[in-house]
Image 1 (cartoon, rainbow, N blue to C red):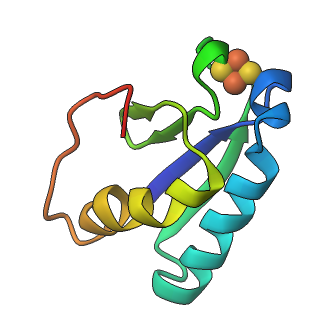
Image 2: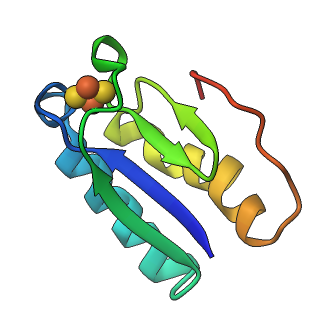
Length: 92
Ligand code: FES
C-alpha cells in the first residue's frame, strides 16, 4: 500500500491543499483503487513551499493542483508497481 499524505495546515490549505487532495482522490479511484491510501496531516514545517505532499518517505514541495497528475504518474504509480524507490526530494 502506498500512502500519500497531503498537508492540510493553514498555509498549505490556503495554497490549495483541498484541490490537491481532490485531484489525488480522483486519480486513485480511476487508476489504483484500493492500492493507495490518501491522508491529511498537520503542518509538515515547509509552509513557505506548500502544498507539501509526502509519498512514502519522500516529501514534495510546492505541489499545485496542476502538478497532481504528473506527481501521481511519476511517483505514485511506480511505487504501486514497485518499480521505483523514491529518493527524498523537496521538489517534484
Ligand atoms: S502548513 Fe503545510 S507545511 Fe506548514
